[in-house]
Image (cartoon, rainbow, N blue to C red; front, side, top):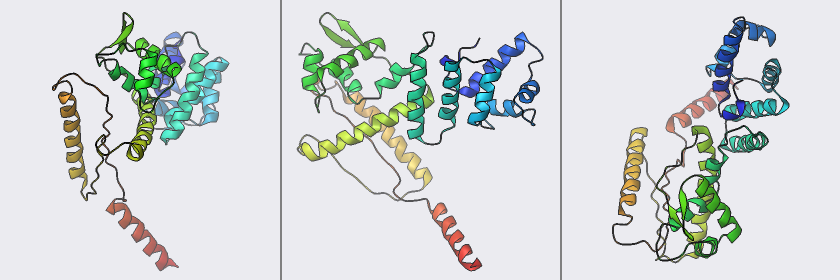
Length: 289
């Protein structure tokens, strides 16, 4: 049977399991499934699998029962439906944590939580960069002292273990060496993890603004008025700058510190179309009264 714990998209899982079940029993069609679920629309499940309809929690439970899911499989399927259909990143984060709990109870699952954990703490990428700086025998204790703000050595050891499992660092004698690999995560999982990552970085930036001297940090801001096309152009410029900054690293000699560069541009007003629409709506309601 198709293993649900390997899926981060319930619609993809439904497509796979329907193909599998129909290959075993040709009568197991979309119409038959909808009938068994008590649905009047014969193509509803097909529309769900195509992303054109959503499942309610009640219908998801009926689907799990129809396919004889175990209690743990049913729980995972229900959380997965909520995860995929949730509209806010905070909800996705909560549901993803619940999915990980289910996965941890299933010995046959291929877990993605290691990639998720990589972005769950700001110091994981920093430790990966730190071990690449020569001159010290990097271990949990020296790394703990080097981090700013400091992180307990026990958490640093957990980070080293995680980075080694991901293949992003490797043990080299009594110390560690950085491995140049890219961390790959499913798109939705990645968005949740990166949300938490940026939230932590914003907190670190605030601490630096309050505690570090002006010679050690660089903060600047500019308020811009622009249209969508100009916004896209500036984003392209920021992307190019980020790549150029990476090219500078190592060009002037060995590194002696790790810096965090945050590039942020975000809206501080509604779009004029939205303001115009709301204004016209208010005028219309006023006229009716």
